[in-house]
Image 1 (cartoon, helix red, strand yellow):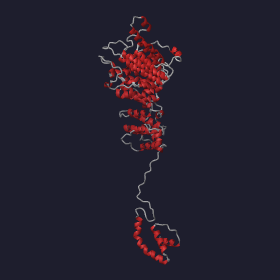
Image 2 (cartoon, helix red, strand yellow):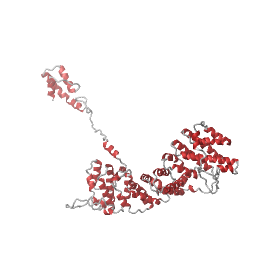
Image 3 (cartoon, one colour):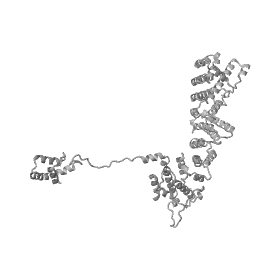
Image 4 (tube, helix red, strand yellow):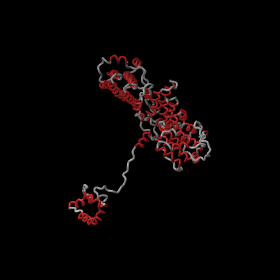
Length: 579
């Protein structure tokens, strides 16, 4: 239901009387209005609280309005049809019943208008409660329409209320991203999604034409946030969740078909993308284009104008436009003139530092995977990448070097870049023209990949090791670059700084605890075999030097290793004897 232009509640009078009036019991006021029509004027107290200064008062008023007007919709106590003015209702020939319904219908319109204004409130809780209350009203109007329609031919949906809601969500001055994310819950319903998409298209055309196509960053960001929150159904069988379910509807609902959804979805996006966008908005759109937009369009080739314009901008935007162009070329047989020439010119030093580097090299690898590409074109890409590699960071080099090797593997004719016979007196000058934009004129086949030979002296060992592969014949199997596409500098540094785990050396030994014991007691066993041979000699020595029994015992202890004996004259003689 469209909000009335005139509000029936004066905000000036409310501000004057707010301090004087006692606090209203809203629950009791709602009960009084629903119980008896003689208390109908209590609805003014409820509407006044919708504009209160305190957040809790506004929240209570929203809850009271939701209960009151949803009940009145169910009871059909709101006027149905074209609403006459209140003055006309008083002076006209309306019955008391109709006058009451006209009166409450005007109060309902005033409530809707205030709730729409509250969507721009500073407090998020007030905005959220107002949004939920308005959607309850929309569901109530869907079940109990306020328009007189022929059920056999028409389908009633609160279009005007949804349009007013979308118009307030798409603010030109306030970022409503958080509120739109809350509204995403309602976009899961098929009929709500359908009419929201139609409302967005109409609102964008009206606002942008009024501003003569000028860039409106806040407004366009709100529009993109709302459109990107829409999840399209992939199959017709998924269209089962509707907010409005009306019995007795005979014809097939036009928006229940997936093709109709796609048509409205397509028109919405084309209507938005035909105007000039902020550069940041181009990036946001291109990131989701191939996954969330193109698959759900009836004619994806209609996006060629937008993608071409984005591809011509340059920088990261051109890199992102590659994804959409790839989908159109690969799946829809799009013929894009000078595509490889433009791709060649995207190879600049900045390509190694942009956020979307991994996606770019993934797509470039796909575009250059065909074996039917001319040799001069592949050689131009290989040579340009090799020249850029001289100033690239290590993380990029770990992608570029395998990328060049794969190009040579796919096109054996490019091996001339590695093995080029040269005369001894040939001048050491590279004929390759780095500034040439046309790969057919850059003379890459006349040059060589001397840059990779230079990278063999790179400070990073992984890069130097990768560059050394060119000294040996390349294997037929291509390198998988997917593992290195996402590698970051900090990951590379952590891997280098991480100490390798020291493995224990397997040794078969046992720590010796005594002089002649240890290592499986092999020495002790060997000594026992020869011990008897020393007994006789020890006896002769003891007799010769007149050793007493104590000296002989000390010697035995020394030989067995069970005690350390301090050296004296006798022990020194014994030790020297056995040595």
